[in-house]
Length: 132
Image 1 (cartoon, rainbow, N blue to C red):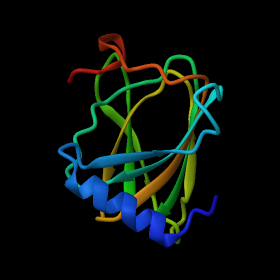
Image 2 (tube, rainbow, N blue to C red):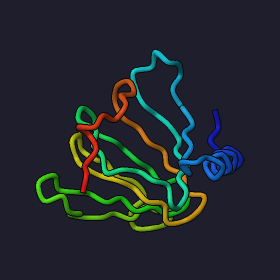
Image 3 (cartoon, helix red, strand yellow):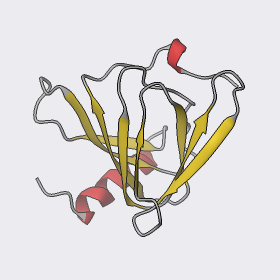
Image 4 (cartoon, rainbow, N blue to C red):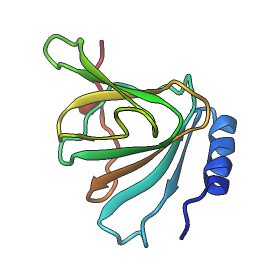
């Protein structure tokens, strides 16, 4: 499979049409695949709660656009650091450790990331959403 601009454009158009302003494209070989590998098109204004993945780290590569990750402290419930990703910028990818509270905001329309995690998809439960 080739991941080209046409695929990213199509995914971006679907994200723009989605009420969540996000759209995933599954890159796994089958549903039995023990990984999570996906393209994720995220548009500005997409609501993404502060959350964590308790059992897996998350690796993210910015393919196009510009996005900012915000990292939070559970006890103080404050943003402790940020990282801006863009393909031509100083940071193009990051690895978020398991259990780290975080969220992401798209700063430009057409932003697309490659996102990878270990294990099967597990929906985020209430214990994995940080309320401010």
